[in-house]
Length: 382
Image (cartoon, rainbow, N blue to C red; front, side, top):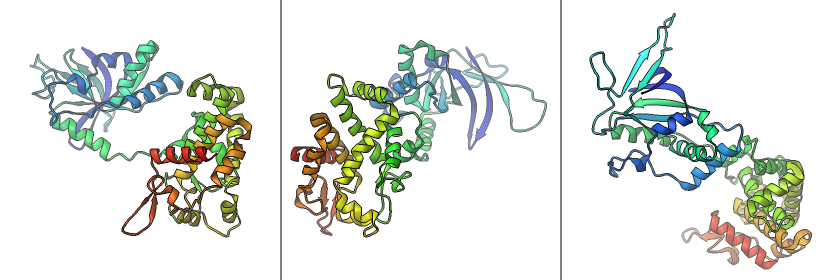
């Protein structure tokens, strides 16, 4: 039997209990979708696990001393899923959970107590399965995590459809923040910190960087999003690092370079590269800074001012830095100035831009493959 001090609550038709449990204890009781083979596709209660997300969360737990996971929503499952979880009564010897309310000296909605879970029950994450499984992975590398506590919300199982609906409600009604907002609030990731340094040190970006959305409408006076700056800065930093430490892997080189220069020093080098990229398009951006054109007008006519353009230019610059070192700028400028950067130029059609046959307009194809194609096209012209 497992006992936890909780607070009882009610929301909608749900009765729930909130508390905190050590990872080591919780891990022994957790079950995941693959553990419940008796459930078919119409009754399965969770999506499958995403391997890449698990690896990122595991790394976060192991590498970030100030890591913190929000509450897991856990369903108290009986071994027999053809029935609901049974609450103990005075005359019942067969039960799955029992809540003993504590006496409080004042009235109100604060209802503390002790929740007892029988040794037969399992805990199934209706929300937070990636966090829970990542913790299991992290435990195998760092057993001390077993002593850390995670907040939990516990609900008694009724039927599979109840858990399916909980999963739907918790995910469809949640609105994740954009990557740009996430990076704006980031205080640990050196790439995000470097991108924010670039945002203030490069004259064109200072006061013209979108920090709330991943997209720029035609009316926006901003020239770039923070998300695009992070992606481009990552590629530039990798190029600088690979040129300085050619024998190491990508992750090792970036860490080595950042450690050697410090985040501020690395940020200044990345900012200098961005300044050179901007200078290569000075005939266009100079009109924006002088007030002759708006940033929206540049995006309307040309490809380089879109997120696709910024990330591709940063990626190409990083590859050229790795290849040519300090002379990369000469090769980069020659390459980019050899192209017609108008959105309807034939060179981009079918890759960086897609023709709308109805309107005759070309839309920017802001996808990973298109970004890679454009970056390689620039490097090939260098």
